[in-house]
Image (cartoon, rainbow, N blue to C red; front, side):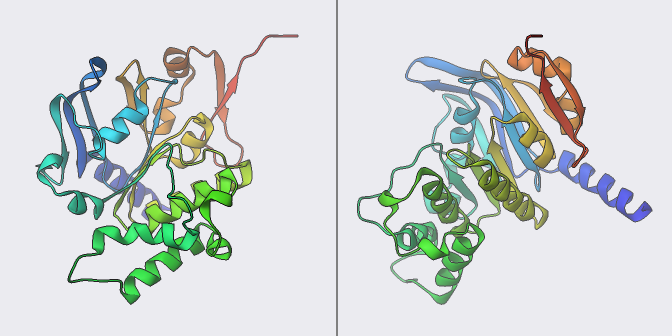
Length: 277
């Protein structure tokens, strides 16, 4: 028991001390509309970080900025001690794997071929497709339960199947950091839990996971670090037990609730207070 407690304490210290990816005083705009101003965020290395907040609060915008898809108008994103803009795109893609909120596959592409696109960062004129690439694609499809549909065309799949294929493509990149924008979209509850369990396993194996989730109870159960946002700013961050409280949920979401102990995971469980009928 003492060894487990000591290990948990050391892991928490590590999460607090180290950060490969951070945003430093960034101002983020779409056209001339400011989404976030002077925002600073550190992603603890080795964490399962979940970003939560109401619709249009800047969660996905922050994720796109961290991934280099969106350049801040002020401040910078830092990756491994250097400004992320100093890296070439393929260099970033070997470190950060991004699952965007909405993706469009080319017409007439099969599942296997789309997942294989995840190996693009490792391809060059000199280095062509290898056994290592093939193994990465096979492993990604096995992990996402898409191997049996590998021969099918992506545009004939259901929304849930397509979502798992896109996750497989990101996993095929085999990056140490994964950024996931609403990864459980279109999935039924069973596949949501299955996917979140997969991400938790990957996190326990050493990968840093950064996800935008709408379900607070999923965030509390699977994350070990939560960032709560509102109106483009960070309201609070830290351990789920410190963040998922009745006061912070009401402040961020405007929702009155009770927070109780989840009987299975013993993590915070949000119970909304509806009208008494």
